[in-house]
Image 1 (spheres, rainbow, N blue to C red):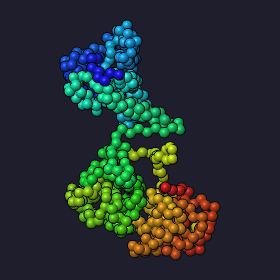
Image 2 (image 1 turned 180 degrees about the vertical axis):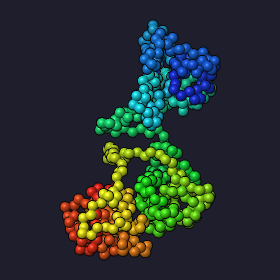
Image 3 (image 1 turned 90 degrees about the horizontal axis):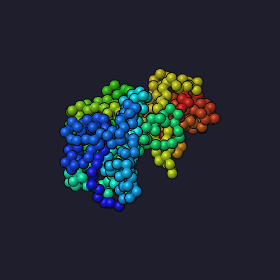
Length: 508
């Protein structure tokens, strides 16, 4: 295997020409023959550099509106020929095919065209045929050919041309091939997923090109990486880099805050809300959210759906937190909150979030639709003799939003658009209810007139009885147990209202 290959002939055909000019001049300096097509050929010629049209090599013009330009044996033969095979070399000479040692090609912007909302015809025309074929051919023959499949790699190639005078090592060529196959596989994945929307095949394909190495994973002995573009999602104003656990909590925070339209603040710890309040002003929302559980709020993640002003920032700055997220901060707020260098301030950007959720499990992956449903008063069916009041319906709606984003089994108490307490992640609903009662009492909340929401039905009347004794006046549950009537009867006996929604929000 040849370790060093001198670039003598290059094929260049690119959609994006940014930063290509220095490479053209370096190739010209080295006396490399340049073959090109269409707009790239014109670009090179306008630089005053000699360029050979691919049509001169193949004796065929570009046809079918540009769909066929490079798909020809004289092009692919020059790329795929194995230099160490005597038979391949003989055929190149026989058919007057030049050895092509460098291929610079990118792909039509398929993904960008889909994201732009373009029509099907425009999208289909952005499925690259010649480009993807050139990339695969050159990458396959990396032993003899350099493939540059992205403008992101132009700087690396330019450095090689300048410092090595057009000679490349096998390790360099293999590295370029690795990147090229990444590009081609990513491209094909997005094309497949586009076609797989209407009547999906039961296969799992994902490809994300951007990543960020994290300090560590869930624990310091675990490695961690985030795949995605955090810069598109958030503008970081202050603080250290987000950790694995930060990201998990931030994801949960974003999910719950999107349920609310009134000025709202949520405080989360280990993905569960330990404080939520909706108020007319964001400062009031913060004060009442913190009151829910000021102990658990320590070191938590805070998220708001309205601008953080100086007064609110002054209050928030009194406690220790890991991350604070809002759609905007006033300049005065940033100055106040930036006084502690490690605390992370994030401005949330308007980014469309995935509608599918997936995670690794056992020896595979599970995927599901995002839980995009939430039941309001119109979806609540009264099953007791007593109907909830308008205020109770409003509080049940508020509580149901929190239930949806809290670990099962969960019980949520709420009153006047404020979380009063929750029982989280228990193995029984009775334990979750008891936990919520203890927490509410420990922080001085009066549960008389509060409402209760559950992520699951009540197969026994014990929860309804305990709730009544604690002062709860209305209960929301999905319903569906064959013993629902026992809980309904207990509510009737105790004078409680109960509604069912017909929708379960488990969160494991």
